[in-house]
Image (tube, rainbow, N blue to C red; front, top):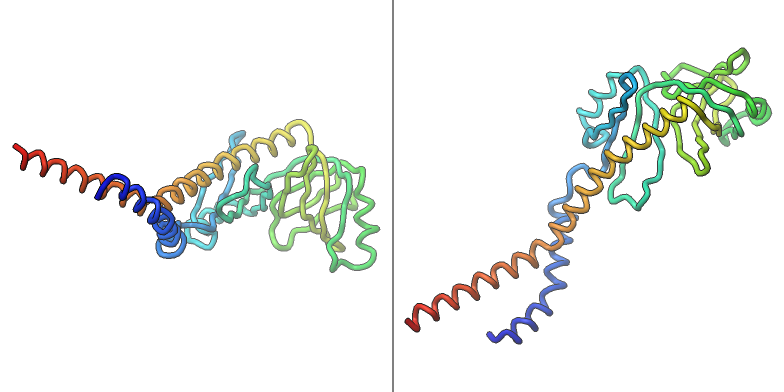
Length: 235
């Protein structure tokens, strides 16, 4: 086979070999833990975020028992993720100033009026709640118990909070130590997610190209063997 013929052969087989790699990586030998669980725990002033495999796995369930309550951390990655992930953090409290509050659809008719009274208040916001815990908005200070935090544009935050009379989304700002705590949580979680995002990208690059690379390696070995045979024969 001449070099020109080999080039044409390579041109013909490249796409089928890459498609074979895609089939192998996405169907036959799928990337482990496509649905990943991340847990963050604040110990002292330090935030620790780690990956615990699949969020239905035993490692994730064992780790969750270390805290009395957890809350979901909702933060859109800076790029489109190649995996589905669930991020949670251990219970903690912060101070925030409420800017708006919206009840969920299934609340009673007076829920909107009740939640509107929260706007403008400074509140102690407890992130992470046990099943029967509820907010205390009648006394001072206002204490909200919530099961999530979402990072919004312009330094805003949103949590799903629960009271005896209502449950819904509470929007607020934070400052000082509370703001720093939320920023550190976001930073540490983003770094941990990025590690596994890069691992996923590397896996795809490897499996998608493995059959094409194998073809090139085998072709190179055959070419070298033919050259060596001709050299020995000529001698």
